[in-house]
Image (cartoon, rainbow, N blue to C red; front, side):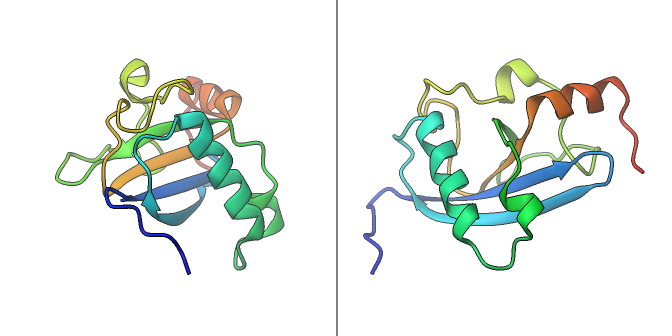
Length: 128
């Protein structure tokens, strides 16, 4: 049985395998400690997705390295269906900060992707 944390939050992580092909898989994480570091949460996600059934191997084994806030409850959504390409300095999470310090709260939607793919997508945002 899973230990219930008194201040645990629910976070949806959008695993972006391919920006061009719009290959996105949402995964919900419940009971997340907002006081853990972003680096620790990344490790949790990477470990968890390798064990999940229903995710294809290319999604499970991809080199995800960057988390960015995509959307928060009661907030405006981006016009881009794949990822919010604006305000990177503010919305890309820094590994040494905690989720709480990074403004991640319950019902936050995070995008998890490979930074080099994101940079290429920003330079030429198109779908195949």
